[in-house]
Length: 415
Image (spheres, rainbow, N blue to C red):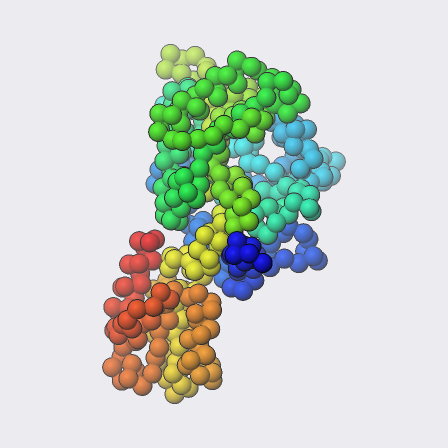
């Protein structure tokens, strides 16, 4: 086995996920349907809170829409029959056909249509952490990277005109780069841009409107160029309703996948008859931008597991600190420290088992916990703790309050 193959096996998110007890799969539940443990769920919650809070700060309206809808909705959008083969079979309820949703945009467009809209409201940025369901062939399922149910950090931006759309595309790219930077991902090294284009001759896959395709592709190309980005162009990779900017990543196997997207849509406004009242009182058709800030939660977690080799930064670590008692007689004080950490919203685990301190420390290292605290007679007498860190270095003796302040500062900084 060469070094590259060994690195792939060692850093494969499926292997690390099992070792760190983050998620599992069950043939009884179904292929491609991950089950998240409390540790994996902790990572998800942190990501979801980060996404929602940051997007709201940037003017997005976070909404909730149903996981199921009438088949008529997807016929109206045109996704059916375009995406028919990747949709689950319809369910018949009270004589009507419903489907588990494979995408969110039709729901958001119906929300837009719930009342008349004015140019003063635009752009409207609907966002949602949306549960989606797609039938992927069993042969392409791969851990968390390709699954049959996933949560997409999705958004649809309704713009007054192409100038507003160009500005929103630029803002979406800035948001994506900010979030990637928080994760420690480097542009050009860990991710890169691809301009995905349509095929004018493929009328089965793409909506037929050559002029609109030319205009949309030019707008995305010029936006990337104005942003100073290096990018590649890929034929026949667009959505059926318009071209898109894809943010591409490779996993440890060297397989390239699309992580995030920014898409230009010139079809849905017509299909849904989206309009707004312009400043002159006339009705006009808006432009729609689809975008995802971090893509599917499952896929980005897979990338991050491999990127960090399971050693998550403090803010994302499923267990942020372990409290280790030297012996049973120190358990009460160890529990007191553990409860103080939990009260400060620091994810703490208490290990007051009968195992030796050396074994407890080895377990904390294997679990790649950022910090562990040793509590013995000296610490209990002085009401302090001895703080050890995953990266090594000097053991620091701290009072409980100073410990909590230090960990909270690092957690909130998301370094």
